[in-house]
Image 1 (cartoon, rainbow over the protein chains, first blue to last red):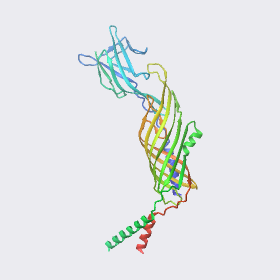
Image 2: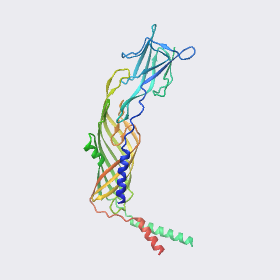
Image 3: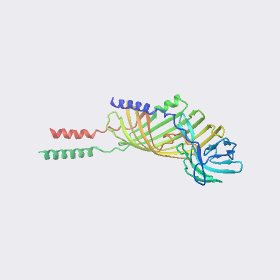
Length: 147
Length: 235
């Protein structure tokens, strides 16, 4: 009898373990933060571009309406390498980056989403400084660009 | 007086151990094969779209068992923007020790260690929300996924109606390694559970059939011998 009670208690344990995880989880960061600085005094510098685009697609991130010192640039889940093009009236500059991407699960209900990591700068016509390889909501700045 | 009491106790204990040593003629010749099926998994397979089957067999050697387990897992979670499927098999093998070999109903509590492996494949069709690159459906496939892990398990088998038993096994699965995956992280490893965890707990509820092919007497509990010796001594 005692043993049967123990077996039945196991059923209770089974129900306790059957709860699904909470779906309300933070969606990971899918962009990087670029901050422009003055090359003379290293203070934040507001920039205005005719267009900030990506070379292999027709995606336009910013236009001449935007005057910012911080630019948020989206990462593409279809590729691991992107070249952003910064066009002014007189010059075109580029920034080529690479990153790792992994389609990971938030939960069975929420489904998967892309997680990005290991940001690298492959080349740029700007003078730059990679300040953080991490791609995360807690990161305010990934790349410093001195203009 | 107290020294005499302790000395007598020590002699009694020694005599009882001698008796135990004489009684413990270890019979390693197998006497039964135990077959089990996970009833929760059977229910899932019958009443849901998922196929999940797990079978278990073990053979006895004295108070020990050699256990082997085999299972099939096929899942197909579908949600907003994704359609995922995974299918594969797994096996576990390892020794177990019966911690209750003197039970007159041949019920048992056991502890075991197992090595487990799984082979499976998965695929996903994923609708990427527009984050500046347009809406796109991305497809990924992992054709040859392999995982291995270890388990420490503890369980109980209780006689319901000879030769049928019920029982459960609690498992601690650890040291999981996965290979063969590309950009798609598998959701689940057959037999292990969530693939993004290196260790986790598991639970199986079994219906068990004991096929006894040799009459092996249930050994007497040695502790009774000690008690008898103690009783004789106090008399």
